[in-house]
Amino acid sequence: MKNAFSVLLFTAFLLIFGLQTLAQFTKEEVAEREKWEEFLQTAEVVSSEQPFGAREAVTNPWVLTLEKDGITKRAIWKDPEGRMRGYVENWKWEIAAYRLDKYLSINMVPPTVEKRFRGERGSCQLWIDAMMSLRDKYEKDIKTPSYKVFPWNRALYIQRLLDNLIANEDRHQNQFLITEDWRMILIDHSRSFRTSKKFTKNLIYDEKYKEGPRLMKEIPRELYDKLKTLNLETIKGIVGEYLTDDEIEAVLIRRDLITKWLDKQIKKEGEDKVLY
Image (cartoon, rainbow, N blue to C red):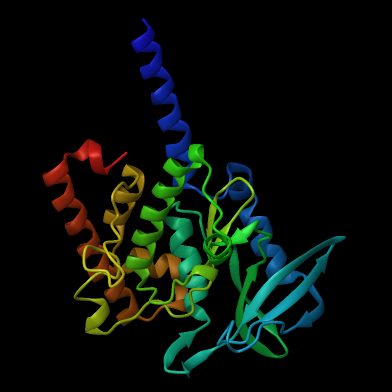
């Protein structure tokens, strides 16, 4: 009887945290996503500043204070398009990354839309008031609470899959935001959607990652199944004008690399050890 009760508790734990890690934004936040998209597009800019130095942010983004109907929120606006300090940047990729994240129900990327500012087109992303960044966590040696280690690790596996899919070559520690309740939010995707052989022959995160193995060890079955639904027309419908056909084709090549890698792990470890 005691063993049966323990199994029930463990099963409930897996269900709760499995659902949580598929969507790092809460159910309530996801339900309000379209509201914040509309707010970002239509709210008035009441103040703006560029508080980040070149070492912190190559793209020199603006922090906007937006106001509409008595609601005030901050947002990050950027408009890079081209080569900057050796890297190709594009504000459109911020929006494409959000839209793919939304379609796949990963829900780790904050609402991001196109907005004109100072007469220019650019991406506008809702500001997230986080407890800390991953860099803060490491520099201050802040330990993950023991009861959050399991969902945190699962979130990391999903982050790796997303960055593998969109070829985000710039996921440094300041781009991981950690909320008060230890949920992971991902920002800054203007160096994504690469099309060169470097990003269509191999995955960024796998056994050969330069700093040691970074695997997609456990992935939600729902995410795995949704990946397989992607095709050229589906992605066009998701991202609109924000990706070219070549960029979409590269996404599909990487999708195939991801599913091939996962299928290999399933064959090796068993489906129940890879998908949940």
